[in-house]
Amino acid sequence: MAARLVLTDLDHTLLEADGSLSPEARAALDVLAARGIPLVPLTSKTESELRAFLESLGLAYGVFENGAGLITPEGLEISPAAVPAASLGTALASAASDARVRVKTLGAHTDAELTALTGLTGGDLERARERRFGVPFLVEEGDADALLAVLSSRGVRTTRGGRFFHVSGNHDKGDFVPSLGARFLGSKGGEIAGFGDAPNDAAFLLRVDRPVIVPRANGPDPELLDLLRTSDVFVAPWPAGRGFAAALAELLS
Image (tube, rainbow, N blue to C red; front, side, top):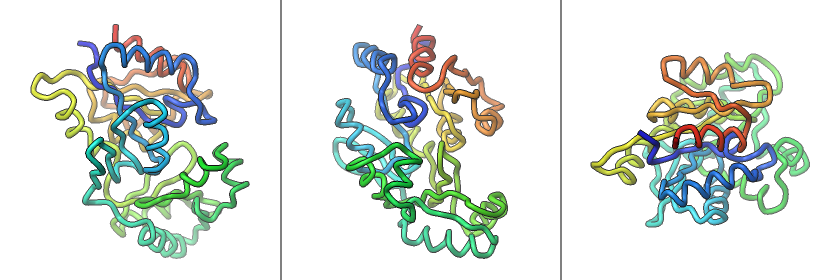
């Protein structure tokens, strides 16, 4: 059975490293629209970043900040597990001190540093800073695993995205998959395809029927491969949008 709902990560999956949409990916989205197959992004991006993306493509639904909330035409659905960013920042600082690890949050980077890391400028950069329910950070010195263990013991979740670690409440990208399936597929059912490239995508890829790993230039993320080892996972033949398009064509055939 061909996929009837497509869920996808954005950076390095549907989008290129610079955040652009390749011609192949754009053509793939045209195919989905022509067939009436909904596309829903699930991303670590902020609500305002995601809204700008949805508007640019005429999409209505999207999950932001690693499952903190869902944008719908009727408004926002916020996860009951979402924790305000200020509280998460305090927990991260305390855990880093106890683990003797030096971290640098996204908010502590200058605009120039963030542009160098992400390629974002201007309004895109401002939207990336508008974190409500998560704190992205880099480990600059010390044992990252020790820090993750301390954070876990304090009831917060840490995942690794394409560039940053993300500390959040106890929610993930997979939390909204059942409700999205019910909303779009209803009682008729049908297969859900999911596309991702990083470990923070595992939570939703484990809950779809057709999980796809989109590789980087040096191949699929080994941690994500390990997390999905019990799944019938398909690895796209190329990175980013070109790989997304090729894998989608295979799933829709």
